[in-house]
Image (cartoon, rainbow, N blue to C red; front, side, top):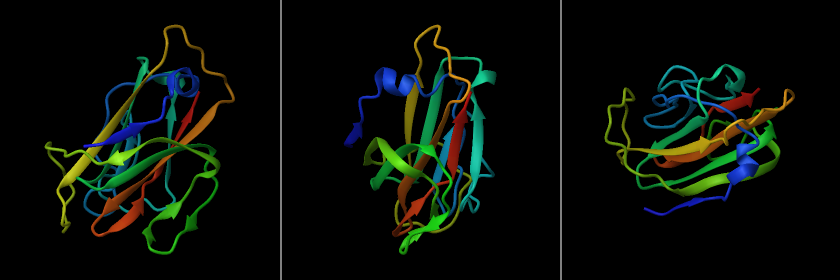
Length: 171
């Protein structure tokens, strides 16, 4: 498995500020999903142009677990933007692009296998995969009140690419 993680250190640490445990798939199709600390919609449901908010001011710890779900052994990209105002369909890709520029890639690579339970049914030529990116903030970090960051992933699912829902991270 090859996964590339952009060196995020304090730059990303300055964007995200709290957390708990990760949640199961937020999905469209068998394995498509994006979650962050139990924020998101119903598992395995249509998530086109859906945005879920993660308020960092109410989280009890300094770790956010961002979980991307897709087909195991297939490519994925996790991206970040300071705005998610689009709902733009892209031909050949399931669901719509929500992030609006500039967009930064946080992680990309090949989706590692996921051996836990999945409530997502449906046909797929590949078993489920899951990538977790733990984001840890330095002790005493203060989140700026006007801060906003939006996360969205592009994953391979059921013989095509699919975009996930969007997670809006605020203070």
